[in-house]
Image (cartoon, rainbow, N blue to C red; front, top):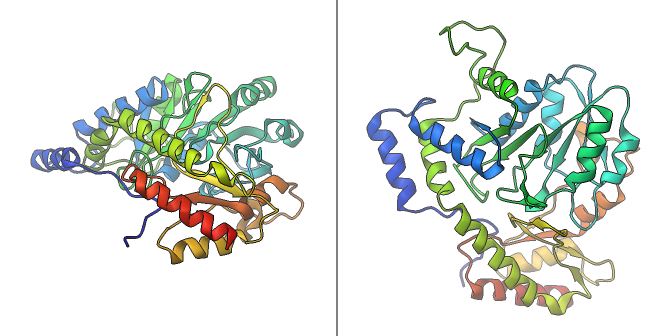
Length: 368
């Protein structure tokens, strides 16, 4: 029986055709028409005036922080439960990440814990829309406005997610997206930063390309980076973005099928939670084992793997890992989610039979 992978990119003849078009044009590096087309599509997805394409999601997040003038000694509040790149980008700026706990239902930063973490050194807040679920942006933006802080949305995993009718990536001062090979929209490697601020967009475009002036070639008014996306990469992205509506629709169908298939196991697991007035994009369908179960999370994953079902653990709290270890961080919810969470296979090539097989395999693993 074939293994069921946790994530598989959906690629078509259109991606091949656009890449071949880019090859035939000889525009294969960081200039070419597909880059502007892709940036326009990303800006439309995020509901912003600008999108600046980058070579990966980490560089796009770093670009946003440098663009917002994050400096040595500054502090940035962020969730304990996130991928480590969120914290690494703060460290790249010689600033300090300050970790707060997450909401146990959404896996996202708990707005009620943010204000107590603010100090005179706090410069901004990085909100992560984990696994495709929007964070509670209303109170977060109110806190940020009250204290004069910027907000960056790390929407690497939340293409097409919405908060109260607004696309994620367009609510804070900046949004950051990843287009890694396992994301909803993929370019293999790639990223983009979004904003409505004209001056900030111009600054980030400068920074992205070695700080070179757009008006005076090979004149560099600032130190920048080589964070550019290639036209070849963008060609894949354009093809992907042309079917984002279908991708999101299919993921919603997959989540609904999982909900139905796993409804009889809710005494042992918590199913994904979607907040009111929000649209979950379901990059991953993430369950949590309840503490009353007789089989550990890790053992459940081993049993699933043995039966041909690939899964992923939830991220570890960043403050529990060596580069950022801080035993004083009060993050019991993050630690619980990390210890009990499982990402089930979530990709558009899954059939209904695949999902039912995952559900039946999970049931056996939980009760065996």
